[in-house]
Figure 1: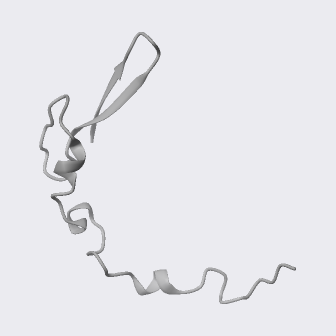
Figure 2: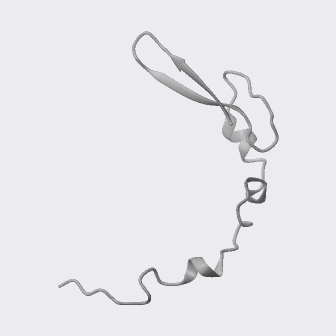
Length: 70
């Protein structure tokens, strides 16, 4: 992944995604990167398709134990 860092005289830093990690598209300086990224599917990034979840992610965190705080 390529990031561009621009530092200005008033101590502001801007960090930009320079190259798309999926397809290698190089963005220009003022381009909105989110418009390019939203064109990819979650599967392109190694994620589950939209609306699908892993069964392991659905189980309770602490073995189903109920915590009571009174």
